[in-house]
Length: 166
Image (tube, rainbow, N blue to C red; front, side, top):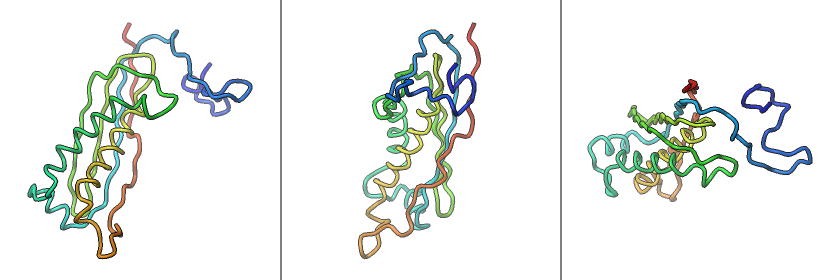
């Protein structure tokens, strides 16, 4: 049994008995409808948040661009996380919440297949937040070109669900 089915950390599913790295064989697992939701936040200066609200950032619509980046990252997770399977993505939802000095991004991913989609949701969050940073870096830099008020934080999986499709 694998780590995913038993939940025991002592069974390393991505290594052979000899210690070599391997991809987990999910071929015999039944298809299940799966959903994962991840979230994270980027801390920004209040003036940057206001510029985003007013669509006043020189590079363009920050949240629309970040949404596209998040969706692209979800679809390409298998290319950047070495042991992830390429899975059929059935849905991606992104939701931004603008606070006074931060933006929270929540990404929900749906799939029907043999393995979960938590990594896809996490990739969507981290890439979406990185896109926000890229879009606002000119206004976030201080006089020395540093980012003392900017940071990506609290990236986590909120929920994961699995329902047999039989």
